[in-house]
Length: 135
Image (cartoon, rainbow, N blue to C red; front, top):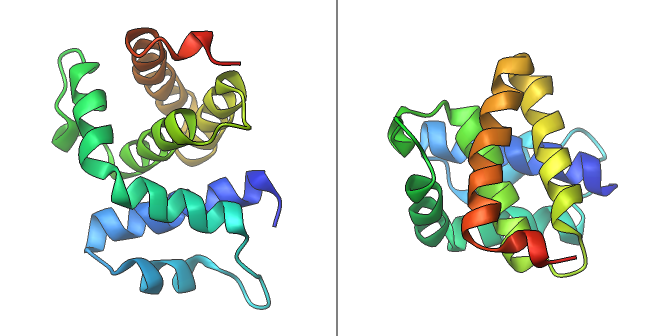
């Protein structure tokens, strides 16, 4: 499983957990296709995002203008949470790569409008946390 597919599957699992309250293992199993093996990166994204959700949500909430985190769409919220986790905790991936991947995921699921929303929230978060200095 390459990183792009791992991000897609992780976003799907996080979405399912957020929407239905599914347990992590159940969500992970349900998003994997037949004969698809979960990668370490996929597992790290789902577990890490879940474990740091409260911290990530604080950061997201502080960078929303005219929105609350509960008002965000489930897909956008899952993608933004996952991207924030990756930017904060995964050292070997440059912030701009994670940022671009999140926008592309949002566009794939929700179109250009979702891409712009994710772009705006992540841009402000990157600036606030000085993550633009991380290479």
